[in-house]
Length: 417
Image 1 (cartoon, rainbow, N blue to C red):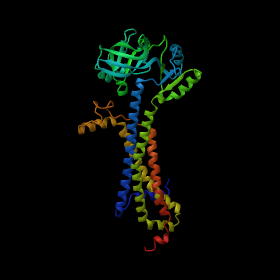
Image 2: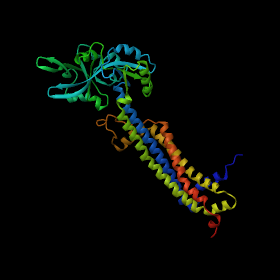
Image 3: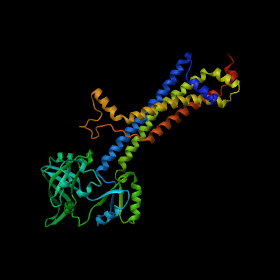
Image 4: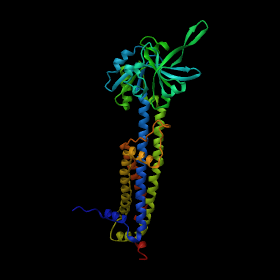
């Protein structure tokens, strides 16, 4: 029959103090609960931040492509040839050309600078979710030669227009006239409104048919700003970019979403790291409780330690006994926190509405925030990182008390017994 070493038997036994030492047992329990709460809070907060990061990434990339092919410092000449080549890559699931220029929209006394994007409605759904974000109208309403325009909902409100109204687009590309260079002006008809859930897009973007945009911004036949690509896995952009650099022999510029929105996603990642460090202090405080618990246990067990040393136990064995005791406290607390954190993260979509209904308020009101629900995305790498941190801090917390126990001399401990 398998038997545990005596170090394990004594370490586990010391966790349950006798009645006269109930205070030590209480401190041990509080340390265990503290580590559990710290681990649970850290896992939950990391999952919520992952959820917000995922939601923002989906909203941003829903309106822009994962990658863009263009010629360096100039317009892309023959986009159809590059389109056929790009579709051959196994990770590319969609491609569409676009013309992207800045312009100014006016309606009566209202003026707004916007990013104007020319698209092909029949191909745009391959690279963006613009059609899914339409509030009024459809992308199919953009027909070549009719000069229709689709506006963001906030942009339409700022200009005080709706579907069917006429607005004026002023393009910076000038036309030469007897009185000098004049900006190009074109009257357009609003044929649709969209809401992407990002203020940057909803208040500053407008869409035209590709052919109409080419005429307004003086693009030659077949010429576009770039070719947008959508991948089956957005995290494979570096591999695809390297493949295209070799395939196109460096003739074209390849730009992906990690470069276009680098500062934004780096800021989110930095915020997540700082939150991890701040909440890790909760686990550290609980670990300090283990230090105080172990010091009191060592003081209380001096007689037992002296007896063990007298009958032949080595200092290393005594040290192992108290390290095991501290580690068991920490591991049990970490496991409880892990289970609680995983359960809370997976059910945050049920718990948050319950709290809001119970107390009669909303964390993120829909009329103020575009993300009106608290998202959660559990990543097991974060779970293991938090659990590993709790284990390491617990291990470090046991070192000094266990070392102090191993240094107790039997003669000194039994002198007054």
